[in-house]
Image 1 (tube, rainbow, N blue to C red):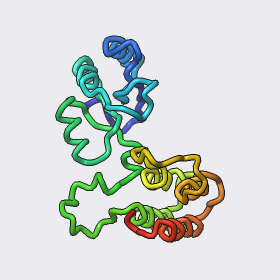
Image 2: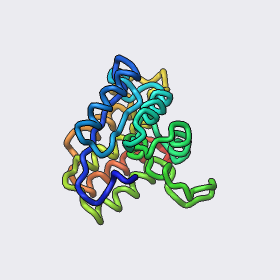
Image 3: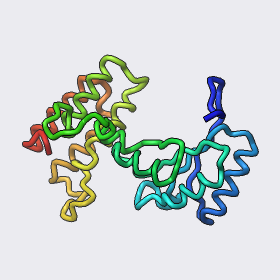
Length: 208
């Protein structure tokens, strides 16, 4: 887009407002008048947080109402196919990915086509690969590693779709291990690798 150049840019990120699409468009136009170079819109309302289906119809209307402003859409994008579907459905200029990428970065690799791929698939493999990179390119703080691993292991250690799971049952190894991961006990790559070994030992299945 012609508005995006090598000079410093000013952007804004908003959600769909509680008042609906029309209110959101009116606010976006005010932001445009204030001089932003592009706009990112999370296609859920504030109270929905990260839950529920994003309102891509609202996203499409916002994009159409701002023909001279690049609009990037966000919300529930968990794989490369989602990227394609959202851009085709809304005509947005780009997408923003957050928790989907943190949970499984390989899901956005468009070159992975077959089940025989050697790319990592399990939580342990994904986390191990990430720690390899964290060792080569150390993040500013251990908190970056902790947050990334929390998303990688969230579905295994905090299974929302398992109705028998009780997050307060301390007899469950998953509850104990999750508590260990989210607290500031682990501060080095070596210690986080120790967490992976403990996960494998407790789960009894590296691909769980």
